[in-house]
Length: 424
Image (tube, rainbow, N blue to C red; front, side):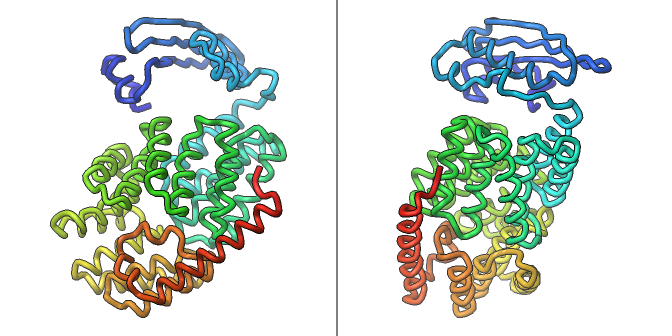
């Protein structure tokens, strides 16, 4: 959609998307009929390879998608493309309104705000009401629930449970869908079962190697495993598949920040802000980066901008509170502490975000207590090292004890998972 009204040459668009060929199309609808015109363009030579016009009933949209995909794959050639294509016989009919409700759900899910995730879930619920056996609607609903605790002050355990149930229902209806397996993976990752997340995410990629979100979330599994370089490579794969995704660009910026590659991180984060200026996540990571590399005035501005956009996000509160505390805005930081403590009473947020603010306020004892609670609640401190706020805590023997205890517990859980045949 970024290129819908663009006057850029095809070759330039292809360079920006990092592709060799582009599918260009137009859709016109009249009553119950839809006309789709599609053409495949060789961007390296700016020439048409193939073109076709489809005139169908609106309820046949999924069959049209499958047919177009097959014909393009045949034109491109290649065993892998042919093997991965969805056959028309594998797609059951779905009415056009159910399909459009799912498109609306996906649109709002991609915006990654608390209000939009709630809208996304509502649209998917409407789709399920119209067609209770439509697996993609359950997969979309699971995705919405999986991300809500990261962007809103909702009850974490109850919301993840809803996401897991919806994902399981999607798999029951269609075990070939990759999305619900990826969703189960990210829920495990966020809910203290990160060791099991890898199997779910890998299975999703076996079903669909081009699923950008599976690569994106697998990158965080690698972060939790302490493999930052591999995580960055995996996130780069996600960005190649979704170059216009603001959240993937922002997540890559975060991983580059973790690796202390600040210049590259800033480029990715500013790209994310350009793509979605109303999403607060990129501002927060940029604030952390600016805090370490530039005038703290920039960091303060970025933190406050992020807060203005994502005041219900526990992560935003924690990261902003840390930046504000470190730059002399202690009163504001303490206010964010109170907000996070209020969220914790309703099973929202994570102790690690409170710990960040306490570190910024130079209150190491309180920070350690929150890290102990984090380790107890989520089975360890894996992933905590991605925030440089805790660099000084690494010299505290009690912090090292938490890390060691978490490693031992992880090994035991891994052994139990292997003996139980975990994964798919």
